[in-house]
Length: 251
Ligand SMILES: [Mg+2]
Image: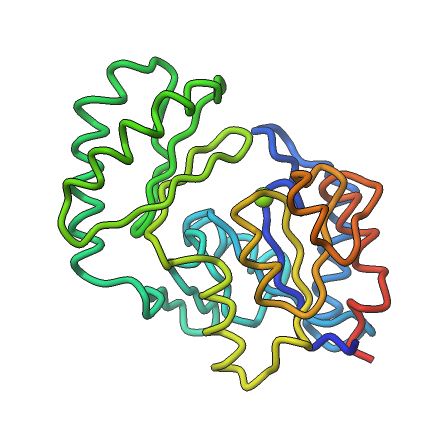
């Protein structure tokens, strides 16, 4: 395989999953590899991001890593282009869905947050709701309540996926994979030339939309089972290892 573009998840792949300081020296090494790849100064294919994180977070990383391709934010709901500083919804996101999400958020404000202490919103999202807790076991009882209310909202269908510390409420049909397919179509690339990296269940759709898929050792077992390569190392160490694979090189 000759890679034209690497599309990677962020948390658990580039940075640790936990809310703590990053491994500076290792991240520097990764950032240097990314910048050289973007500038065409190495054999490594250029990279872009595909993450559940909101646009402002992605924008900063794009600047640090010199990412020149469109990035995918909010788990496939939002595209962001650094060159012209434009964010836009993926084609699958409708106005009715956004209005439905606002109603769901009002329900969470009044019925969920007051009951589960320590549960908070991740701020800055436009087309997805993410709840954070340091006690993610509460996600088990929260999920059916949110799903039941969402079913009462016309035009709104959601998927709810837990990651180690976040409960992500996504619009049905709006996935990382759908956004990747849209992006590679727009770029005129074929799926076989795209390499993907991810670590949680939400990244299963990355697996399905790329030619080569790798994950770090901290990835969930379901994803490791379908990956083309599983690094023996965690997050950024795993990323450095994965980027040395021949499938990640542009020639
Ligand atoms: Mg992740």
